Length: 86
Length: 180
Image (tube, rainbow over all chains, first blue to last red; front, side, top):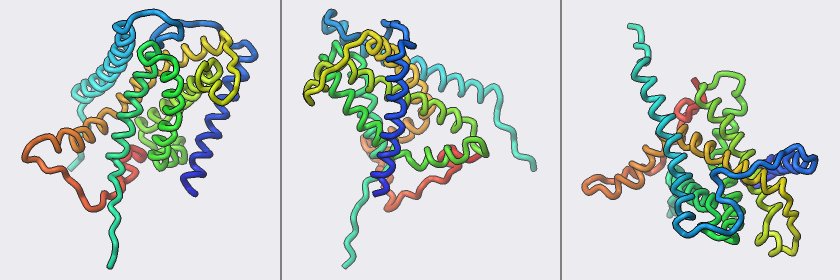
């Protein structure tokens, strides 16, 4: 029962977001900008290109992880945690 | 005689689900790889698995929501904002995906809109999701490394027994990165 209630809360929140997106889309407030990482919905490209899409997205995610994790590790090394007072 | 039911380890369930979500996300982000029908159904399935992911982390969501403007670690606050953005983005992807659907909606006898705006918004939110997922993974990297060592690497390493405590204690709010 508790899980059902929580699921309903999540669905309600998702419906609010979808409603807002629908309102924005119907009002024409969102421009038609396309392209980028998402593979697209048209035909074209071979199997190698399709696998390349996955590798590209994985590479972007790996780069972000490396930047954030590496950056925070570097920051910790430069600025070590304060020693507890005796 | 008391019958004991072995409950599955919550962290193992979370790790398995998260790996599944991540792999599905990568495949769903390449519709030319999977084909449009699988792309659409995978997107719908991702919606269900993301809901399960949220349910498994419900206590963290509630604790940070209650304390967002109070005594909370800055990392938990940052993670909360990022997760909210990711939730909004994923919802927009699934919603706009349904609006331009060629396989899922016709199955239920519904006609999709096929508008250029929905296609544009679908691509835009999908592109944004790659960065948000990257940041989400980065912020939980330590947990991912720890759980991978515990549940995947340790059982494969000879001579290293997998720690299987009878009952795993719930992490404290401080351990969950909620309280300072």
